[in-house]
Amino acid sequence: MPGRYPRPQWLRKQKKLSPVVIKTKKVIMNLGLNTVCESARCPNLSECFSNGNATFLILGDHCTRNCAFCAVDHGLPVAPDKDEGKRIIRYIEALNIRFAVITSVTRDDLEDGGASHFIRVVWDIKEALPEVKIELLVPDFRGELEYIERVADLPIEVFAHNVETVPSLYPGVRRGADYWRSLQVLKIARSQDMLLKSGIMVGLGENDDELSQVFKDLSSCGVDVLTIGQYLRPGRDNLPVRRYYSPDEFIGLKEKALRCGIRSVVSGPYVRSSYLAEKNYSETLRKNV
Image 1: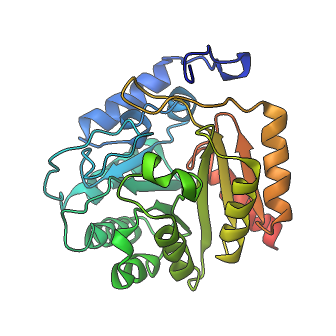
Image 2: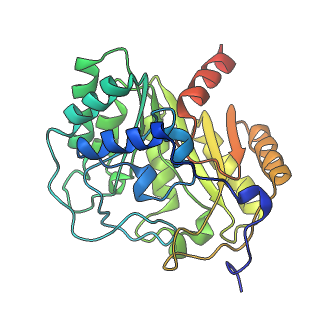
């Protein structure tokens, strides 16, 4: 049955609890911060934490949606914490971070989908540490134009919103989301002077033609950076893996996306949306010069 096959050799990444990784985890815990690295059981956690890099998960750690691929807890969320940005600042200062990646759970319970909290967190950081660059990975804000525009208008370097999979798989993979609504989020954000980024997983049952169409759709939205990674089942309650792509196939997907007009593509079995985000940001800027 799908998902019962052992992972191939190229998907056996070792997790190392080095002293630096343990230190990073302690700083995060002591500051009362959430990270998508831990909540989503990211396979790159030890690699990123060893460099002090973490993707902050704001607006709590309980999502109001229940996407079948995701390990983040869902259920009754907590009220937004107005001091969350200040604690992120303390983390940035403690680990001398130059590039901060911030995402959130989806908060359909809030009138603005959490947009005002994103705004508060970004301004807290930029006013205290204006030299720090910020990448936001945002939810769809239920497609509300006003809230998307307000977040996209922030002084950030990268605006990211993931389509995650091909449209035919949305009913089973992204419950409560809509592919065309996600494209609209990207189109609205495109008008601002920053890099536009999206990401997709493979291995859920998509086919080559569907992937090609997604690449074309993202290119037409003006996406600058695309990440492509292998879906890995985080738990028994999540969807099984339908197919493992080889490293060579990821190279082929990258070449296909580039031919569709996307400027920068990061493609590989362990690639995630915020994986090596600072490096990818710098490399994309150099490509655009």
